[in-house]
Image 1 (cartoon, rainbow, N blue to C red):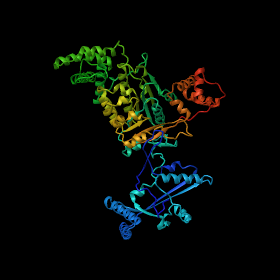
Image 2: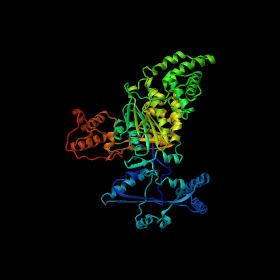
Image 3: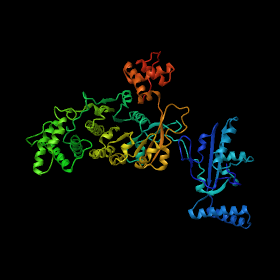
Length: 629
């Protein structure tokens, strides 16, 4: 490839090239020979790159002799040669560079009518890199033989040129298409070219030390495909022995839940989400459970934005200890018979005045009694903390809690979210031989307050010990900037970051908060901006950083899964019309796709037709059942 008589190479060369395109990609690092991905009309390209390490002393001696010979005849050409040798010798002496003989050659196979276009493209691309390839014709057979695998030993002396190892490695082709990671736990996406590729987000990266925990933080503004990507991840989790619990605001997972027969629980006044966190055995009563109950009582009393003094917290702690002592200690006469919020409330309003008088401390027991009364017998929220949770939930693989109805209720939202998280903790301990995943879609904001910080930190740290992970999802950049609770409790305990398409103008502070270096930022700003959409179905890209480095992948799924994942209201409504008619989501998806294909309409037009008629489109239908696994 290089004419060894003139060595037409750039005077300076780096290990990569900064690529800029009109689609918004700026200074993106690519390999010096990245153009090989874009060569037109070829069938096969073989790029040979060979290095030979000669004796350093002998080679340096020959260079000294050559230098003296050229300097003895002082003409411009010789002086330039002396200057080149001097610079090389200085690099070797100063940087301890290794001298090597390098050879590069390229074999291109293409149809006769395309070979000229292919060769011209390669030659032009090399010229842009400052490389003028050799045009030797007399030894073509010799070069072809030398290009055969393992036949580099036949290269002649005149086929090599001398350079340093660092410079020679700059012309090595360092890019490759990603391959499936060697693991039994794989999630399948696509690479930047649309080729399926499988990655392990949890196990392999833990074994290799790339991450220390499986928790993830997901950031993407509205419309970037955030929920769509999480749907794709959940769907694949369900193929393994993984229990998935989602706390959602906005019905983003109703289609997936219906498709895979999950439990979809919606909060309503008629049927609220309930639990009895006080009903535990003596073995279950430990420091962790006590801290949770302290947090819960303080939350009921002060609200998520309130503050609790050290004295108030200690009083609540003493009351909880005494409450369980009066239940578990059979020698005590005035025992607590039933463990629930009603009995705790009655016990607390009797016990707190005794503690206040005995210790001579200030405690507003009347405020405490009045605020918590709405959760007591006959109160507005009586059922929430007194009725047992559905015990069958502990054995359900897939549960979605939809709390959209209370997302603006500052009283209920943090309490219900905390209840669900405690249910997950119990499930986490109960289902020991299964993976566990808790996904908080926007709902985590309800508990990102100083009062909840300890529990949030405890949960993020503890879940690792039970083969679990927490995925916190948000679309509001302002939620994470300037919130120390998020940084200390969530981000610092999430070794995996997933980012959807970002706005450069707003990203600087996010990059600083998430410790994203410049090289990784350049990857992020290529999301959905490459010219890679021809010949592909609908897809959406995302960036996932596991540890210190990340990659960009695409979510590209079948039409069946797209309809199960979609959060577009018209598409969801159309599928729900089919589901109501056919009795199940899988049957609805089968019929929907079959009718759409037979109608010849595009998806958008077909959806519009179904919604306008508020009924399935009646066509001659051949039933088949897609494989949703």
